[in-house]
Length: 307
Image (cartoon, rainbow, N blue to C red):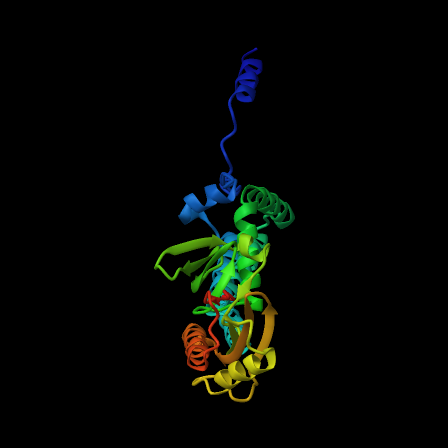
């Protein structure tokens, strides 16, 4: 009976570990996500560090390098475009606009490429930007039409700064041509700002486009004077007029007959001397008519406005 009790006691008591059997070490707790591994710096293995560098470090370095190189290349391309436009003798305003426009296009392409290296869906981003661009274009279609008209004016150059023009229903000296508007200064020193869209969509008259212009005046001669004799007198006056273009013959034409016959006398002169030449021609014709005794009973001396 005692022997049976001792055997039961021995089975209930855990056996002591053998000296030869090794004690098993507790298994390490897994680190979990990359963010948790980054927090536990001392427990991160070299392999995990390399994976972090490959996952985040390399793309960041590539993006920085790409941005720097893209910025330099964009500036270089913008300068090349600007210099090419200057060699083509385009207006400086248009040169700067085109250079900056190309530069920003290149920079936008570089930024989109950098975002794609981080796994951003570039196609969706481009679609969103395109939609935003269309919305902005619809909202600013009036202003954009003026910009397009300004580009056309700067490319085709129907006039330049300093020209005397009639454009958009206004007449004056061109003071400035920008992408949005054109500024005219009137003879009485008023400043007129005309949207470029109104200029391109209408008739443009450039009074100073050429170096030479024709000016004419109307003068009256007594109807009793033979037409040929009157024409000869006026042609002599026009030929001897100081400041006219000698390479182009003056013109004399009978335009009306009555109590006094009306003759139109025209000469060519430099564009810058139009007003002065018209005045000299009118005075010379009337003085010659008076000295010859051809003046009509009711003098007629009308200046034809051709400005």
